[in-house]
Amino acid sequence: MPELPEVETVMQGLRPALEGGVVERLQFNRKDLRFPLPPEMPALLAGQRIEALQRRGKYILGFAGSGNGFVLHLGMSGVMRVIAAGQDYVAQKHDHVVFEMLGGVRVVFNDARRFGFLVSTHRDRWEEAAPFKAMGPEPLGNGFSGEVLYAALSGKATSIKAALLDQRVVAGLGNIYVCEALHYAGILPQRIAGDLSVEECALLAVSICTVLREAIAAGGSSLRDYRNTQGKMGYFQHHFAVYDRAGKACPDCDCDIGESGGVQKIVQSGRSSYYCARRQV
DNA sequence: CGGTACTCCTGAAGGC
DNA sequence: TGCCTTCAGGAGTACC
Image (cartoon, rainbow, N blue to C red; front, top):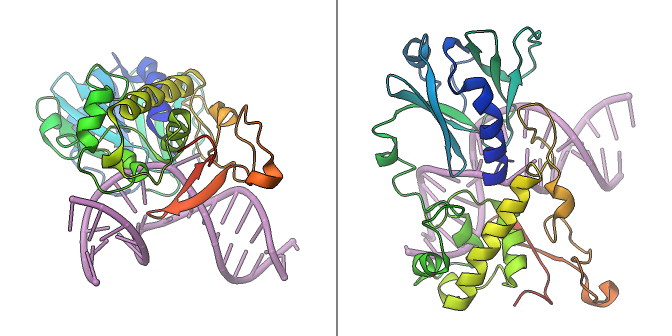
């Protein structure tokens, strides 16, 4: 499910519920998700004010006044649900973690597939630990540009599709937005990453930023599981140019579908890629 | 180093 | 209606 735009939307939705608030109780309904839920975390966070909530790549981090904190990853099917003070909490299947805040707000982490996780971290040490230590730049931050991308791709023999999915090259991209950004930039997903020119990298970097910004503005993309913290769907899926659109025309394309076959679908390193053979070279 | 296959897990969708 | 297969937004590992 969630790539950078969805995680950003979730993090923004969590801020009013968590940031500045005090954790009254942290409840675990099972002992593990993808990784064990840290047994010490409820005691470390109880009574603590959450001072900061932030996103890095597809991860959400929260830190208490003590410096102790958590790293949250939504995996494929993770959903965060904010329940306002005074509103009844109706437990749902796969509700694994509940933050009960002073004042009555609840934040619930629901994850059917349990590919997501919640682990402990610390404000002073998180950046030195995996996976953040080796993580690439934030695509919407100052540390990302065509030159930075060009340098990260130089010498890489793998496809540009696989390279962009590698969080060490650039943070936060997943299958959907890589397909969309490559279409936007007019670059075929099977191109060798290290063969891209400086000019192509410049265009690709801009395309990545544009696609991500537009998706965030649309509240992310909802294919199956994704919902924001209020349970609402995003609507960027209606703006996909190529993703999940095999056989259809890409936007503004005047080619004959019967002749061109429309958007092509191939499998690269086990993941579906979609592209327009006419506009991407 | 790179590519492929496989793994975790559940549920939705499609075929029959 | 139901059973079975296939596939899914992530990411790590084993292996060639």
